[in-house]
Length: 169
Length: 107
Image (cartoon, rainbow over all chains, first blue to last red; front, side, top):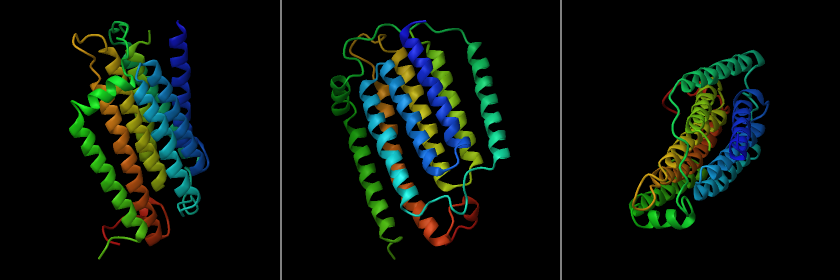
């Protein structure tokens, strides 16, 4: 078992553990948001192992940075505290953990029966790096890039309308 | 050296945990976080399969999976922004973030 595999299993276990903790175990919403950040950060580490460096950086910045930040600011400041309705009751949470564990084991069983794929061939130089992905984004994928920009603009305008106090009459 | 089936197994497990959380929790933000977890699991599957096909294209690199993962991350960010706006409006109007209170289609 190489060092790469060991790191992958460690990060995978961290991701699974914090995912279960986020959904079913922690007692407060802010702790759930932090567990989500931990899961996403360990996924970013796995992306680095899978030669997806730009995606790992973007995942770390947005999924493990901006989104938990937004969630935490709204949870702690913006009035979405779990005051009236909080985390699941212990019996429900245990049932959820049981179902999650059973599903994970079932998936493991099914996937272990598949024929193994060939191990990864060595990736070409610069694979997944900023240069190659940047060139692709600006050449072949320029239309999706612009569309994503418009999507983000629409989302910002929509969020600003909601912050103003609801739909304009 | 990482077996791709292990990557996909991890992605499937994370997706399942996200789905169970989204179905079990009754708080708006908890469901939103579970949806983000599901999207993250899907990104992992994309990147894992993209690594599998890394060296099998003669001309240049096949990076479609990573591009798609970038688009998913951007769409998820937009989704969180709008959903939090809707959530705060929801709580303002109803006084609780329990989705069971959203039983009617009008304010």
